[in-house]
Image (tube, rainbow, N blue to C red; front, side, top):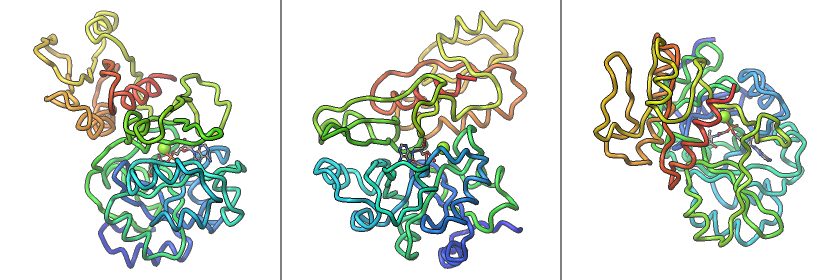
Length: 320
Ligand code: TXA
Ligand code: MG
């Protein structure tokens, strides 16, 4: 199969209607999208990603109204969150309607719903007659893609079309929230800040897993991982520990610190801006993974704003 890349949404919609998959740019990361109502298309997603079918997919919609077609009546706070953050990097777990295949939700009674804000994603979603199931367009467990080139690296020749939406603006996946009774629960840290969610819902419970034993779908600890071993901690201490190895170091910024010659240092944001750091994180991890280094060292970022989500990704990338 030849993979074409471009911005021809009619072509992309045509492939989707035939049950094929296309790579979809979103503001967070690129998705591997298929018709969420077509089980054969959804099966292709799991197969191509080499993803276990117990790990459910996010369903992307063009509007709040469409969310109502796949989910049952939602809590008032879900509606408030949609009004405030959609379109945008927030995924909401809602009780599913039977129209959503069990394959999409791995048999759970909730469906993960998100309205992305990338203009090409929104335009495509309003052209097709169905919502799009789309996980990140990377092989299961590897770093998520934030450019069309990243997608092509894995799926060239395996899907007919990659929609070129340029580099992703946010750069890490959406925040995932659900509800226990009426309390908002954060299941995955991501592109929408917990502080901003709390401002809408009041109390927020954090249920973000860090162990390697997944007790529930959607919460696998090891993820987003480069092939090289990655360690999180004080860069200077880790450099001492791995003396004699070729190391690359990921820092927020150097901030006047001097690293010894021969160490490759990657600043996520020279100005220390956490949004910019999120945008650069996966790109940087991929770049280093392709360099002849043996060890990747990353410092922990400030635990605020997107820093929390970045630390979560670094932590998961460090679990083998
Ligand atoms: O930003 C994003 O969310 C990107 C873009 C493409 O939209 N998508 C994404 O999908 O990150 P994926 O499949 O890589 O991650 C989705 C996560 C998985 O950890 C999955 O287990 C969880 O969402 N998930 C999906 N449905 C769920 C459900 N019903 N309950 C709990 N977790 C769920
Ligand atoms: Mg993923």
